[in-house]
Length: 129
Image 1 (cartoon, rainbow, N blue to C red):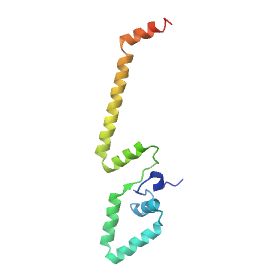
Image 2: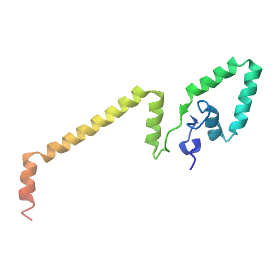
Image 3: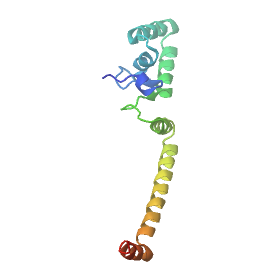
Image 4: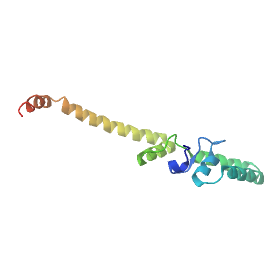
């Protein structure tokens, strides 16, 4: 199955494109022929003197995020991917906060399970029934 931007639900640079994947990414998200886009870019380059078209293409390559390697299963995955590609520090801080919350939950469970009263209730509470 070929992965398209419709699978991901957004405008992304294709990982299978020729140069940076800009034309292929536009083709996948807008259902336009990649060949027609490349031809239009070449014509624009000739008409503008090459540098404006090249700068426009490079700007698009910088601004467009690379396509994810696999489709998103949930909206949270899309949010994390978008936050990671726009700001890795922000995404790492979000991941760190999530792991800290998980660590606190595990510590609370360990406190309950290793408590002497828990062991006492487990031994004698089940025997009285």
